[in-house]
Length: 186
Image (cartoon, rainbow, N blue to C red; front, side):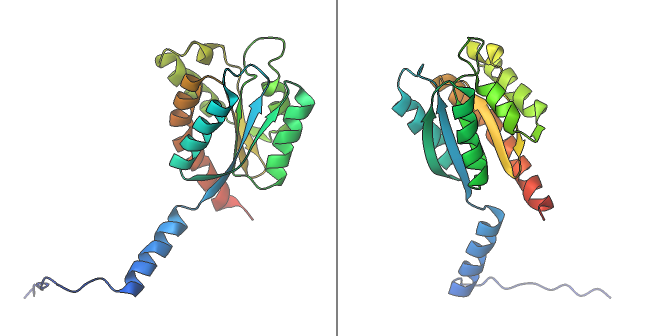
């Protein structure tokens, strides 16, 4: 013989303890991650606008932006900014600019020196999505993506369209990479 239990609807208010427990569980599942933004070169139409857009998009995806810095289009300066972010414990570094084919586009070369592992799928996803959205810079971008220590680094073109599309495409993938890095860290 099987006995069926019926739960009576409860009119009780949630307790403070259970709400605190829920908040703790949510914060454990969605940690605040730190981001660092590097504006490369002097080709920005409006560098403040690009920086503001980047900060807004990162915050929408749950990042706390520790710093936005500007560098010249010089490999040494770009690499110094990347190294500073990695050593400083940033979870994500996004560079804007310097990923085209011009003689001053040095961001990929500087980034390559810092990366331990490249993530070719992330690079390709950003290019494919950009081309699908009609962003010409996406097809010409030499931007890299990868990991240095526990930090994900992504190079994007500096236009508003490239920033918006690049972040919409990259953020879910980056979250997965950071989760994997956290799971396997010692």
